[in-house]
Length: 149
Image: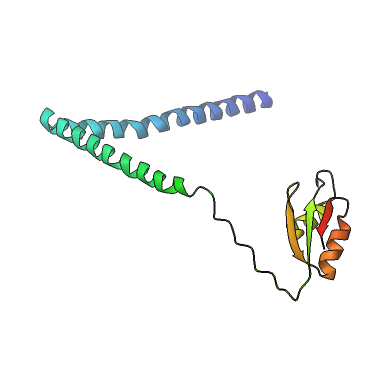
């Protein structure tokens, strides 16, 4: 008996919640429609026609501004290329090319390639010939090739 009372009470609660949920949006939507009707009723047809023409005109004016903005942005879709830094004649340089993919490799090897400035196949990069760079090249030697020393 106690279980039946709980089920009946629970069923009544859910029914009340559903009814409240259904009624709430209807109450909110109805005043908006009524308010729109009340404001529209006193206006004449000439005033309505003038408003719609004004709305259309403002919409037409707004559209060209957007397209003009797009035209300006379309010219420079790509960022400008960076100019290479001038080489210091007193320093030694090394050029490396990525010949292997970092797919299915440890994350540290992928990070080393990115540190070398290589993140896509067959990209070349000229770097200073320092012990740190040499160590990075040795750690991913199976994925890079030294072109020039």
